[in-house]
Amino acid sequence: GAGVSQSPSNKVTEKGKDVELRCDPISGHTALYWYRQRLGQGLEFLIYFQGNSAPDKSGLPSDRFSAERTGESVSTLTIQRTQQEDSAVYLCASSWTSGIIAEQFFGPGTRLTVL
Amino acid sequence: KNEVEQSPQNLTAQEGEFITINCSYSVGISALHWLQQHPGGGIVSLFMLSSGKKKHGRLIATINIQEKHSSLHITASHPRDSAVYICAVRPGGSQGNLIFGKGTKLSVKP
Image 1 (tube, rainbow over the protein chains, first blue to last red):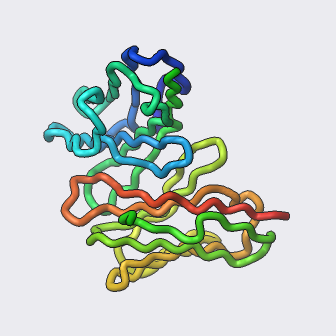
Image 2 (tube, one colour):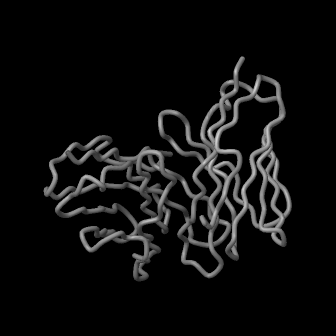
């Protein structure tokens, strides 16, 4: 079946603008994760959704970042008033459960460039 | 100090060589992942383990929970193994987030 998909694949925006990044997880996967990878840096956890539970937002770097998920399907990561330091590849992953045995499947990422 | 440290940062090998990448972590964990990131950016999960050893083809991953250390081995390395290998740990008690190492960039020359 289809893997995790993300859109857009590339986004160039001007400083101060808002952006929305979309993630379509694998059908049936209840857990969904957002990560960020800045140039030359390791991956950073941003936010995690598991079913209808309250999301774990502990990785969001500022209140300009927010994410929503509709049921167990699509998720949108929104960055308001973008800054140049927000430039990064934003990766989404999903797994069929949040249990410790659950393998995460990664999407191709959205490359965000803030000018 | 990072909670997850990988070594080496960069590794160049000749085709056919046996390769070892190391990962040390400082937090209690419930699981450890090894991921592969190709030059195009795509990430693939190679292993997820909480104890012992796992093998898949030419790849072997081991973990020593007491020593807080894991190794990824590649036997008979091939140029197509060239990628960044990332160690990530799931802290014990966490809801699911991972803490990532900075990765090891492997280049296998023909």
